Image (cartoon, rainbow, N blue to C red):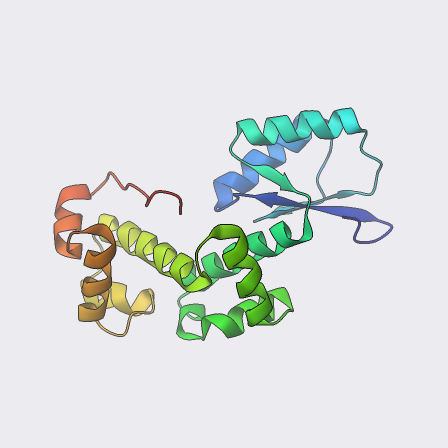
Length: 193
């Protein structure tokens, strides 16, 4: 997608952390494309015509690294919703706000429209995706072992340690305390998160 005469913005699926940003940057540089910026889900490159053979090679390299270029508008919205949810879950201030407000503010479209597209493409609701991401964040914080359950509940937007414990056990099958003792230092993400 061309953003202006000066640069072109490509949407990339499955970018979730700073390591992903660096990996995607290196893939583009491998093809002598110097990105102007790389952020979660986005790569801005100088405006240029990318030959189909170069795009095919770029897509293959991205795929081999676990990423893919998003070419359909709905896929772009789905990826933007995922990035908004990740930001919402990982920002202590943001997790206090209403998820739908955060998504509307970051995407610039109504939550209802984004939610319908997300559910159609992902086969689950935005809320279920958000809960899975919150539980993944709780797992990380439990493994660090530096915070109490009350502090973790506060940081991840749960109303109380009891609420966190109940949701954690529903999803993982064990309590947060049991998880901390069993998995400290060996975090395993939920499948298909």
